[in-house]
Length: 115
Length: 114
Image (cartoon, rainbow over all chains, first blue to last red):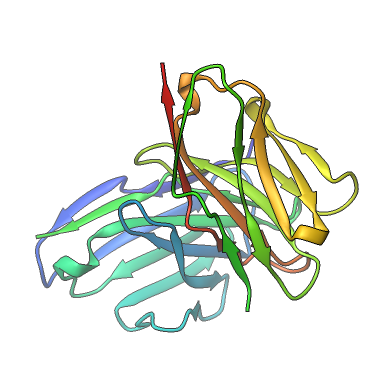
């Protein structure tokens, strides 16, 4: 079946530094990928839609300058949390839309802890 | 506005008992409906989905869901739960065209008693 990977699976960083999270579709092409944020014991909140070769579309209330998204190829999207602060600590999950199968597959998530 | 409501935040059932998780949605057009399961610290796994056709949908791990348009519901069921079914379950809706920008419910945490 279709596989989506995320790297790293967990990361700890100091306040003020930037962290990059990668999302890869391993065996299919994804024109569109999505980034979600999940707080403990809560649902997934869509942050942005990542489109290959164009700018990401951010949901209302999400700071585009803080959460930089790049979708440079059909199999890779990256989320960079810039100048991270403790309130950015969360579980970040990506998903990739399989253009051929009209199916969305989720990555395993990345646990970010900002100290 | 599009929304998904899962009325039960937490459900506890005994192993071997039947299960029903509720999901109600509000959507402007015919939606694509999904149920996902999330184990602690993990991503989401698709259990089943409904787009059209037979309103009773079979999924993986013995789960099924029934779409009821008149009630705007898409409840998830399983005849006999196993301890390994303990997890968080999310109902979601999305468009039937274009990339699937999903709206998720709040989730239902399922605990299994031995």
